[in-house]
Length: 200
Image 1 (cartoon, rainbow, N blue to C red):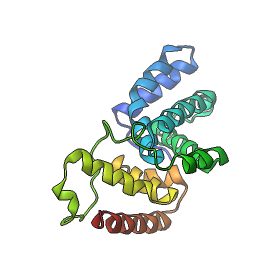
Image 2 (image 1 turned 90 degrees about the vertical axis):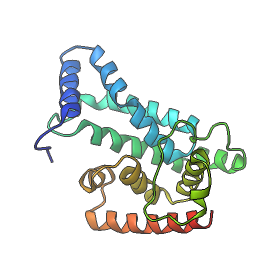
Image 3 (image 1 turned 180 degrees about the vertical axis):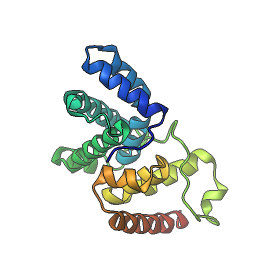
Image 4 (image 1 turned 60 degrees about the vertical axis):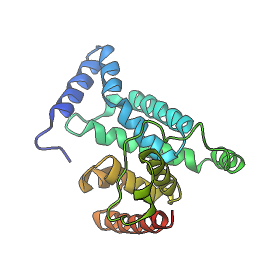
């Protein structure tokens, strides 16, 4: 479904993709620089671990570059990119090796956590709660911990909607959910987060 009026970033993406396909190898570097921070932030929120997030972000861009020749220029590159990132994180979390190591290291998550240098994540209507009484860094850590406790599909829609601030239309394209399913998952995810945070 093409975007009617692409913004500046989308126009730049299309220009760089066209340039790359025409032989400009530097265009790939421009795409990475433009999107790497948001992709890493998304992976960090979904994985809850900096090392895992870095690997998923790198794998995402590898997949993008391998299949970029098939990208349709009338579509949004960022939506396509986020779809690949979400699926990459999901596949990693579902892998037997990942589950084994996370079970073994479940109590040792400190230095590798995604708490540092992350944007503040707001949940609607959490006040009054203990969150208002603690520092911003502690607050973000508690919120990320609450996000980590969600099933992956709930975590995905919460992050895409409230951290990345994507539209419902973009999220349905990324996740493949219809609008009704998306709204239902969001409502349930928010309810779980509210309950978790009120008990913080």
